[in-house]
Length: 133
Image 1 (tube, helix red, strand yellow):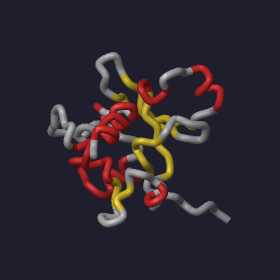
Image 2 (cartoon, helix red, strand yellow):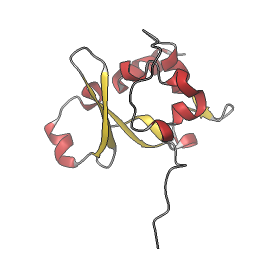
Image 3 (spheres, helix red, strand yellow):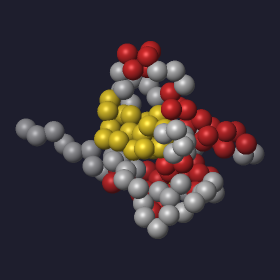
Image 4 (tube, rainbow, N blue to C red):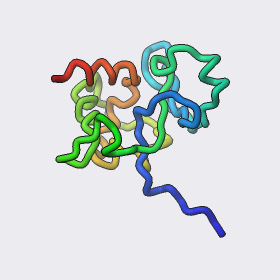
C-alpha cells in the first residue's frame, strides 16, 4: 500500500526552527533568503547553530486555527498580509521556492505573497506582529 500524498497539506513558510521542521532557506550576507531543497532539522543542527530564525527559514505543517496568526473570520493566515506590506522591491519574476505548491501564503494570496518572501526572516516577522495593535 502506498503512503497517501500530503500535496494538499498547507505548509507554513514562517515555521519555528525545531527538530522535525524543514529547513528551506538560508540567509545570505545581503540579508536575502536563498531557498534550498528542504532538509529535516535535527537536534544536532539546533545545538550547532545559534540564532536559528535570524539565519535560516523553516517550514512545517500549517496548523490554521491552532496558530496565533490565524484569522478565524477570514479563514487565512493574517501574517501573509502583514509581510506583504513590507515589500521592499517587487520583481517581475518570482524566485525559486521549494514549497510554493504547498505554501499557505501562496495558496491564499497568490503571487503577491511571494515577492517579498525572500527578504523576510522569522525574527523580522515577530517584530512585525508585536508592533501591531
